[in-house]
Length: 286
Image (cartoon, rainbow, N blue to C red):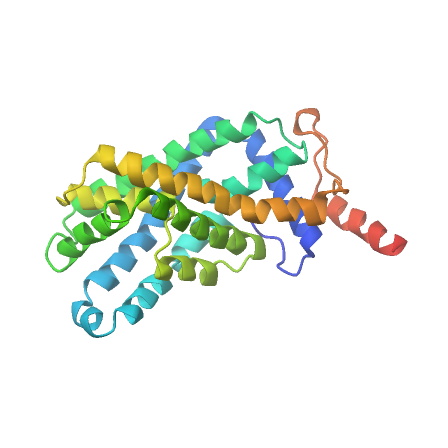
């Protein structure tokens, strides 16, 4: 979806806008959703690659000041190209949809089955885009096949998907998507994403690039181990993290107010003017 609405909107207007975005996603063609998800997976991988190049190439700085390297790696991850393509141009990213669709379903703006269907399509679209980027544009292109980059990529995959316990990855997933959902909510993408990468939280889609890439480079990790331990734990944690933003938003801003929303199946969908008029009338009454 295109997040082109001004960031000066009031919280209840942003909440209504998110529900409207869910309606638009529900109405989109399935193949369109998949293609947008594929592109989002690939675009997110650009940021992941840049972060790994910076961290992998800073071995000396890592030895003397590892915290700075993590902060710098987190800083470059949400690069302008990634932000623009995924958020501003309406690509489909699973982690943001984990916030948008529960809000739309809770307000009965879309049918319940739209949530698992969208998440399923976007999950495999993000996965396909991430694997395409990792295999074709990184591994087979040979751009980071030499050390110190190759060694760092393998070590990074082990630190992400092998060393932590299942519950640790799950909890890191919660922290990650709490921050990502805040980034989408306030339209200030860079800082919350910078924080989650620098702190080492787990983003299920970002890991779809970094962990398989490490396996391709020979990290002692199997696909089965990655799926059972890392992917599932991060996925579930990300869902909980998104709900920690979506739930309070519904309770505080949409509990007794539909924001002009109607059922998507009947075509009674709000537009930006209806948001303004609805909240304008509310302010005049108050």
